[in-house]
Amino acid sequence: MIKKIAVLGLGKVGSLVATLLSSKYDVEGMEQFDVKEEFPFHISKGDVSDEKSIREFLKNKDAIVSCLPYFLNIKIAEIAVDMGVHYFDLTEDVPTLNAIQKMAKKSTTVLAPQCGLAPGFIGILGAGLYSQFSEIRMVKLRVGALPLHPMGQLGYSFTWSAEGVINEYINDSEVIHNGERKMRSSLDDVESININGRQYEAFLTSGGLGTMCESLDGKVDTLNYKTIRYPGHRDGMKLLLYDLLLKDDRKLAQKILSNALPIVDEDIVVVHAAVEGVMDGQLKRKEFSESYRKITLNNKDWRAISWTTACSIAAVVDLVSEGKLKNKGFIKQEEIPFDLFIQSNFGSMYETYKDPK
Image (spheres, rainbow, N blue to C red):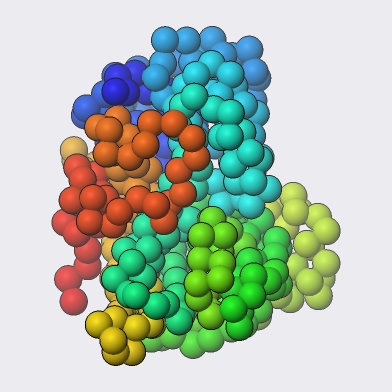
């Protein structure tokens, strides 16, 4: 059982993760910058990139939740394995995932990366749909975190990590196409998609499937993940990153985009999943389509991207603590039963706060 939890990174997502978990666990957060808001958990100030600081912070803790940028997570996972502490993160970065998966072979505790929205909830949801089929032909997963009121050609605001967005736009995307695992260029394979009466575009991005290509290899003809944006966004990003070669200078790309696209308070998260295959001897299609907006918890507003990400990782931590998932080794998101997740204390927020149609 998990009793004491360390949370690294207290930004808009990390602070909510710690807040949710503090309702059931003894939580301590670490942030290298001053935290001016009041939260219902203890906060320590420390260098989140310093190994000595992390090791000191993890003493007497049962689990660590990293809400830090992806490039810090491999070292944190290594420390967690060495100290025998359960590890959870939100990374979408494929090299980080692969490194953590290798560590898990010798770990005595749980290693569960990619526990956010996408990857994370979308993988649990997709597996919940395709597990109903005796044969699977197609799995298509789509997620978008967007400003509620788009402005300009890009129609976007950085509602989460700018580094993460650029990373998933530049790195290649893994898919299953015609029954074969392949790498495809992100920002490609653009499609129009209508969700709840609103028109969007969707295109390939890196990392959204997590380990699902590995899990469904040889079992499905088509599997892909695409990011949802307002129409025109992909063309603008393609121009910026490839025609103007900012893909070769990620820090400059991040600076330009962060300066041009201010953070907004009103956002929306759109989730769509579709599976086709054989069920009860017939060819059928199952779909899930929901949208989520900001909510108020304990008199504080939380953007849609913050709470949909935070409740997902909090639910996985809780399920491990309660013994409903395995207690050591690597946990794939698609291994987590959807019914178990959606009925859990924190996973049920996806049902409680979904947009009324």
